[in-house]
Amino acid sequence: MLYASLTAAEKRANFRAELATGKLLRIPGAFNPLSARLIERKGFDGVYISGAVLSADLGLPDIGLTTLTEVAGRSQQIARMTNLPALVDADTGFGEPMNVARTVQTLEDAGVAGLHIEDQVNPKRCGHLDGKQVVDEDTVVKRIRAAVDGRRDPNLLIMARTDIRAIDGLQASIDRAKALVDAGADAIFPEAMRDLSEFEAVRAAIDVPVLANMTEFGKSELFTTQQLTDVGVNIVIYPVSLLRLAMGAAERGLDTITEHGSLTPMLGEMQHRADLYELLDYSSYNAFDDNIFNFQVTK
Ligand SMILES: C[C@](O)(C(=O)O)[C@H](CC(=O)O)C(=O)O
Ligand SMILES: [Mg+2]
Image (cartoon, rainbow, N blue to C red; front, side, top):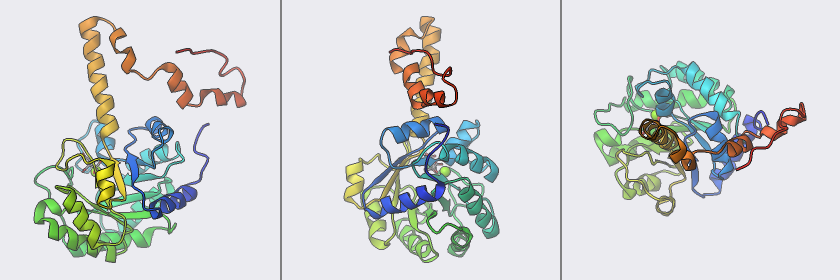
């Protein structure tokens, strides 16, 4: 009821422990705090807080328009609603190394278990689009060092993302991943890998966890959890997937009102009121006042 029962520090420790088991952690993107609860309920290992979703939610493209305050605010709303670790997309870190250190502390205060910072220039763009540009190694190494120095909880996972694959190829990704690990990154997010063998090559070159981004309609094929496990990937994110599903259903629903004059044909696609109330833990609020949940909702 109300919020997670674990503290942020406990969630970070759990995240580290889960990563250490070596099993593939499945982390879908929560497009709001409620969906984070659904992700937890369905037995996933964490919730991802996507920059693409956060900006789309505000009706904006994912080009670095959102501010640290907005990202931290949304992260806090989502993280506090689940006992799962939250991994947040910190884009390019919101500025120079000193800003990056402040970003890390602010997101740590928001209660996330980990965050990733990428090597794109500003304005950044979705990692699965053409025309990206990255900063040089020295610049991103300084970003990651500042991030690592900035954290106060040693369990906060600082992940470095590199977008260099699309620009300079696989070998450049491997070289950059190594430099990022040397700079203190706890995990690597090699963006826009073309196939499984590329994940395998990055995996073989470094000895920290590797993340695979299974975003739809991008540059990577949608590999199964078994395929990713087989090449040694440690974390898989489905960053925008729940938003795409929800928006797809919303679009069909709006068309149904227009075409049929009612939403009766769509009831089967909807989350039932009873399931929503169950997810909200509505009945527990009777602990405050036993008049709150004194009705029946039957399916
Ligand atoms: C992972 C990502 O950074 C995100 O913001 O969710 C995006 C996802 C997307 O736009 O599909 C990305 O750059 O891959
Ligand atoms: Mg992003």
